[in-house]
Amino acid sequence: MTEEKVVVVGAGVMGHGIAQVAAVAGYRTTLVDVDQAALDRGELAIRASMAKGVERQKLSAEQAEAALDRLSTARDLAAVAQDADFVIEAVPEDMALKRRIFAVLDDAAPAGAVLGTNTSSLSITEMAAATSRPGQVIGMHFFNPPPIVTLLEIVRAVRTSDETLARTRAMAERMGREVIVVGDSPGFATSRLGLCLGLEAIRMLEQGVGSAEDIDRAMELGYRHPMGPLRLTDLVGLDTRLKIAEHLHRELGEQFRPPVLLRQMVRAGHLGKKSGRGFYEW
Image (tube, rainbow, N blue to C red):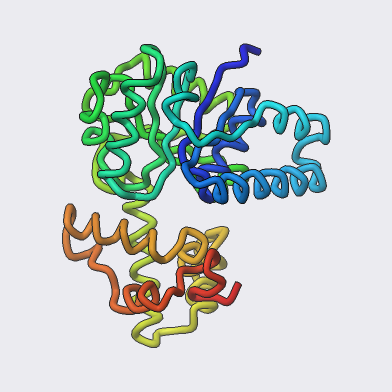
């Protein structure tokens, strides 16, 4: 197996999860973040996740050790991108920040590198316009937590080339992903559908229709969802859900207007699992 290099930009929940998946799949993987503390937390989380995977017999101790040997961390994106075959940007949902990263990658990454973004709602085409090679830019929307949820939503921008799509599909297959391919539309398929359900669940809670537990159990038992929409919102982060809702409200209309309760909880710092409190106590 050829040891190609993957660079993952951003060491948050999604970034370190994607880096773990890449390293386990046999890629020489570098996790990049300007914040050393974030890198340290990400590396600890990867080690803990792999230990749990070994305990549950999802991978062998030898596979985990080999994956960790392939994994490194860095703070200088321009330096580590110089020999990358694939770059996956996984920073917060801020278009200006993402465009700055793509401009750096345009200067630093090799001519043939695939430049991916893990955005869940923003325009891939707009990010690609920050580069001189829009044909090599593609959406790679992973799901939380990436080592467990195997779906990968590949988003083809206006100028994404056939070769870039084919290489991304091949990478997804090597990572053990289940793939869907969609066009570059606000929220794509998954965020658009998932957010509709999540926002309506928040409105129902706001209106006293039922408790968070009962609303979630309705979807888990009645529709066989593995997790209810409110618990899922806690895992995604209420602040992240709010940003996506605001974006889709601007782009698509009133059905995505954020509920008052969601805004209040974000202002109170109740962001879900990462803050210890959201619709549930964590």
